[in-house]
Structures are given as C-alpha cells and as structure tokens.
Length: 147
Image (cartoon, rainbow, N blue to C red; front, side, top):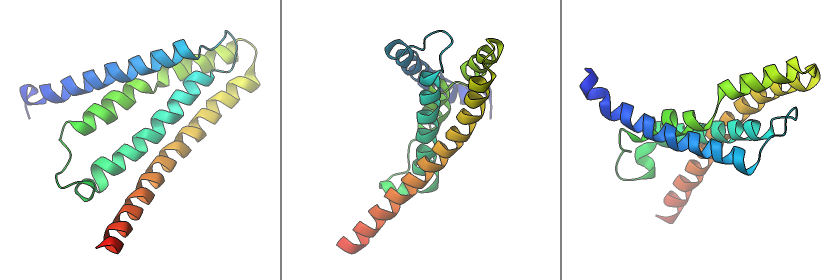
C-alpha cells in the first residue's frame, strides 16, 4: 500500500492524537502536580487511557458487527486507539517523572511510581477488556431473552 493510500490513516491518527494530548494537557491544568509530589495526574491519565484502550479494542475488533448492523469505519480504530489513546497516555512523562523522583533522593516514591504505574496500567487494560466483554455478553443475553 502506497503512501498516498495511508494519508487518511495518518490524518486521523494526528487528529486523534491532538485531541488526546489536549485532554491530557487539560487534566494537568485542572489537577497540577506540585514539584516533588507523586505525579497523580499522569498516573491517573495513563490508567484511564489504558482502560479505555482495552474496552475500545474489544468494541472495535472482537465483536464490532454484534454491536451494530454495520462494521465500524476503518479509520475509527486508528483515530481512537493510536490517535486519541496514544496522545492521551504518556510514557515519556511517566519516564521523566520517575527519573525526577529518583534523582530528588526519593527512591521509595520513584520505584513505587515506576512499578505501580506498570501494574495498574496493565490491570486497567484487563479491566477495560473484561468490562467490554461483560457488557457485550449482557447485551447478547438481553437480545436473546427479549426475542
């Protein structure tokens, strides 16, 4: 597939990324992290983004036609997944904040943030997937029971 054919995908990833990054920036304005404090804003944004990504991938890839009569638009997954969720979550800020906590002589908080974010983000993806699958199963049961 040529570059020209990929331009719509690049465009929706860029648009989704701009929206996601703007949402993350907004979260930082609403809930700023004081210097040297535990970076709760980045932690929370990353966990929410991971849960959202897990749920979206179930909805858009595993059972899309069971949710509606038509499959999702082919640009929806790159827009929401790679674009929005990719722009909303941030590995670079997580890494920088970990380094700052460790360099400030706070290894306990730095290591807690490093490991806690990883474990919680993975648990959030799992919860998003499990939650979307549970909602799907309930929807299917209600359709079958109501038919």
